[in-house]
Length: 132
Image 1 (cartoon, rainbow, N blue to C red):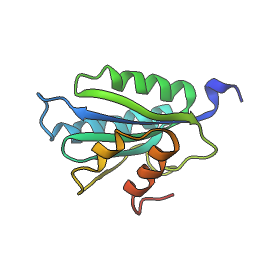
Image 2 (image 1 turned 60 degrees about the vertical axis):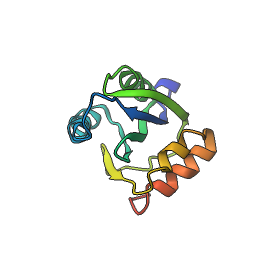
Image 3 (image 1 turned 30 degrees about the vertical axis):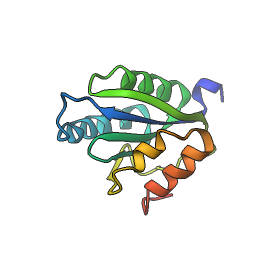
Image 4 (image 1 turned 90 degrees about the vertical axis):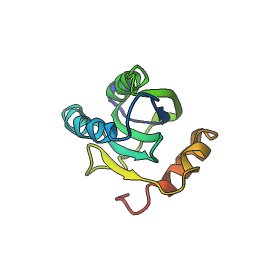
């Protein structure tokens, strides 16, 4: 398998743009589920009412293209990729986009301070009881 077609993941955090209501997240998630399924992308979106944290998995080519689209989406600000790299197997096989919220208002702010393996470990805690 070529690198562009290898299983790949990206984990990012961002903030909801100030002019966007929190209700826009339902619209984002609804459209993303359909689009992600067509692209072979799976993952989890965590939202705390202000910040997003999302793990995406799929081919390297598609994950990088999607990450760039998110970076340019005016509904997000401060997009920061905390981790990206090859992935041995999918974590969210059943979900084109799983969605959960987090009660700790500081959890995603703390995520912004992490990167690499530390960011992945913190994300594992956030995902809770969703499928491994």
